[in-house]
Length: 56
Image 1: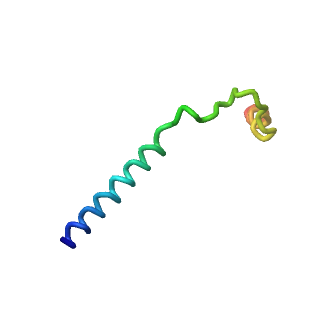
Image 2: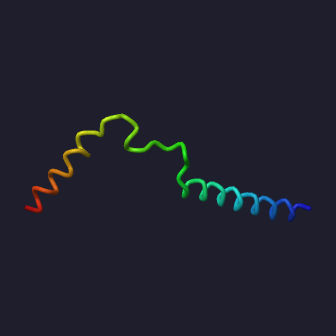
Image 3: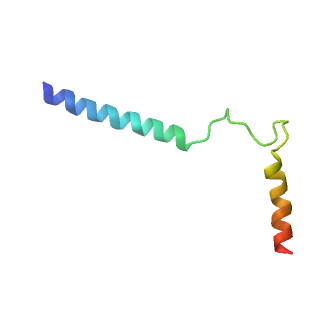
């Protein structure tokens, strides 16, 4: 009986880890996009200018 509890506990832990991994690996529909009406941080907006200047 004790052996079955150990086996069941290991399978439950593997199933929980698989569910959490799959949920973390897939993007949810509730995530915000870049065009949600807020301004981007200055570090992101100026990064394109810096790259363009370095490429010139």
